[in-house]
Image 1 (cartoon, one colour):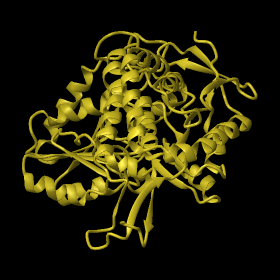
Image 2 (cartoon, one colour):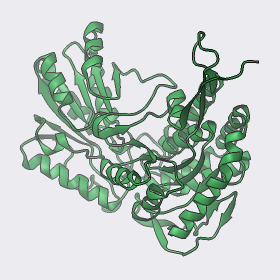
Image 3 (cartoon, rainbow, N blue to C red):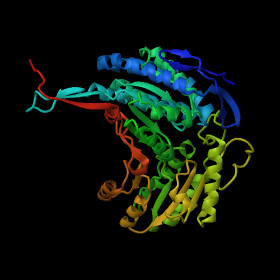
Length: 479
C-alpha cells in the first residue's frame, strides 16, 4: 500500500496543516491501496495565497515561454506514462490496457492540442483593420481553482491545467479523493517541467471541505469543475457571493438515434461505446433510440454484443471492463437496474448483482434494457455504469422530441446514411456536441454542454479562452 503523501504548494511538497487521513480504495479488490491526507482550510488558504503571489509574474511571462513549459510538460508526461496508467488503474478501476491507451493518452492529446492552438492564437490584436487604435487584449482570469473527477482523471486534469497555464492563470488543483494518486504524479511532472513556484498547487480534499473552501474563497477568481450536476449547483451557489467565474462540465444522458438506414455496425458500436470505461463517462450514449423498422433486430444485436462484454480486475491485461469506482456507485447502479425491472422495462442482458465468478469488487454486469420509454427512471437519471436503455421511435420528429426531453444536454449521437437528415438532426438536437456515424470530433473541437450539463467549453482554443478575460483598449499607440 502506498504511504501517505504531502501536498504540493508553492513549488514544494509540504505536510498538511492538520492531518485527516483518507483511505483510497482499489475497486477491484475493495482493499485500501493508499492513504492520503485531506486538506484543512489552512491548507486551502496556503495554496491560494501561493497562487495569488505567483500570478503577476506568471501573467507577465511571455506566452511563448508558457507554451514552451507546456511542451516540456508533454515530454515528462510521456516519460511517466506507465506510472500514470498504473495509478489510475489501481485507484479507479480502469483496465490497465485501457488505462495506458485511453486514460493516459487523453492527457497527451489535449496538451498537444493546446500547444497547437495557442501558437496560432493572437493574444493581442487590433479590433479590426479599420480600428487599429483599438486593441483587444486577452489576459488571464487570475487564480483558478480546478476541481476534477475520478472517472477520466488525466483527461480532466490536463484539460484544465494545460489551458490555464497557457492563459497565464495560476492554479490550485483539488483532484477527486477517489483518484488522487495520478494527480500527485502529475504534480511531480509540473515540478520537473520547471513551472515557477506557486503557478501550480495541489491540495487533496473532499468536496465538502477543500472543494467548498475553494469555491467560496475571495482570492479565487475562477472555478473550473467537472463532476455531478448536484455538486455543480452547490459550487455555483458558493461562488455567487464573490461573483467569480464558474465553468461547469456536468452530467449527461446522451441519446444515440439509430435510424433504419444506419450502417450495419451502428448498434454494436453504440453498445460498446456505452460500456467503455464501465459506463462511467458523462458523454456516454446511454439512451439508444431505434427506429421501429429495425427495432427488433437492434434489440437482438444489442443483447448479443452486451453478452460478449467481459468483466475483470483492472490489473489484468485484456479488453474487458473493470469495476465501478466505489461501493456507493455500485449500490446506486444496482438500485437503478432494479428500478428498471420494477417499472416494466424488458431486461435483455445483465441485471442486478455481481457477474458470475465475482464475490468481491465493485463489478457490475453489462446490462441492457429494451422497451424503455423516456419517462422511466432509467431513461431520466444518469446511471454512470454499464447500463443501456433502448427506446423505440417511428419518425424523425419523434426521435428529436425524445432525445431533447431531458434536463441534460451534453452529447447526442446520430446514425444514418442520409447526409441531409444527419445535418437536420445536428441542428435541432439540444446538446453541446453531436457526433454522427461513429465519427469523433476532431482534435481541438470544444467539449461541453448546455442545460444541466453545464457551461463553458474545454479543449483547443475554446478551452484556453475560458481561462481568459477580454480587455478592450481605446487609443492604443501604433507609433
